Image (cartoon, rainbow, N blue to C red; front, side, top):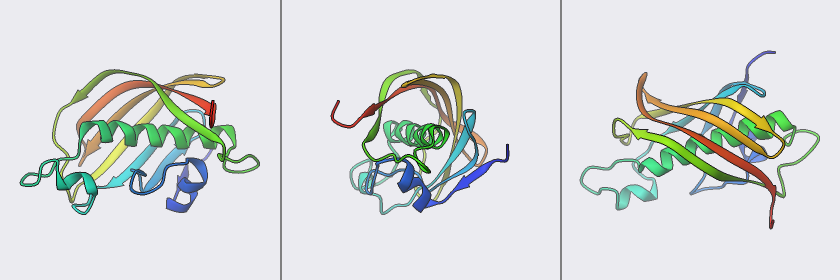
Length: 154
């Protein structure tokens, strides 16, 4: 199957996140049920930079992992068909676990964050992923995480 690229508007159809908490700008090279690459253009106007850290702005590690999870959410939603016949409306993706998180380099405004997500396994509502975040080809963060897809309100 051909790789799929998703723009911002297509992401909005797949996951429920919205600004200021939507942390990916596009998804590239999505291979359903296999992998995807999320792209985040890190800008100094993002609200977290006002306090983390004002004189040396650094993207919080937890937001890097959240951006990985949002990329994985697009992969799952696309794979499951929520963006086409079905709708992601009424579906939420919750973290179930985060393991072996490592932060190797700070991510700063002006950088492009590439989020490489690979499915380790997916059964029903529980999915497990490997995530690696890179800037200019250098690893800045990595982790293994799992997520659960649930109906909103459950």
